Length: 240
Image 1 (cartoon, rainbow, N blue to C red):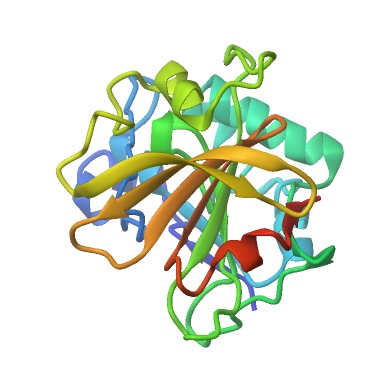
Image 2: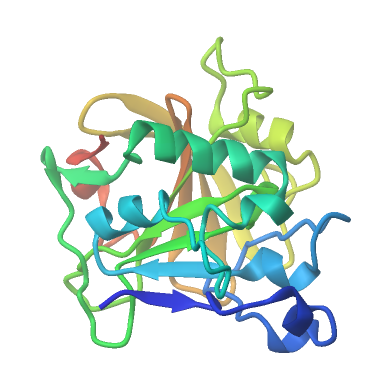
């Protein structure tokens, strides 16, 4: 059954009471960057899905009755990064998904929780899609993906640290720890089809690490414990 969080939002509800309109997702390092074109509560809206096919279908949906918001409908409020992201998914009729040994991940399929979440505006002010695979320990690990803006220079194969500096110079990075970070460092990681220079963040209050890397025109973040999603697991990971 498809679940939408806040899909029934209306501007009249959000304007008088921002705090009652949204629920923050479980991303410790999320950064929502408001602008003048929409109520701040709209930026934290999330859409939830049980399957990949369902998600792609909903990127194409319009609500003619205007009784509820759709992913397409949010283009009226969210600005250029969001519109370009949605239009690309709609045009391609697909979005990169995590693959293990060349096969789509097995989702967690946990009662009361979605398998895929679309965040309309999150880290670095970009829209992201988060996938929740089945984890042997039962923990809340996820793989989060966004398209890099066209303005970001990647021709010379820069490190993830350098790309993040382009996206947001003041964000946590090597030699720039955030308040929740224990350590941030670069690490070469072998994936199934390539090797990447990743940026690894360790936290004071979370046993999971965050491993970010550039994959073509994508920025990918993997949240999980290193002893569970280890080097062998990463070596089986790719995106299609």
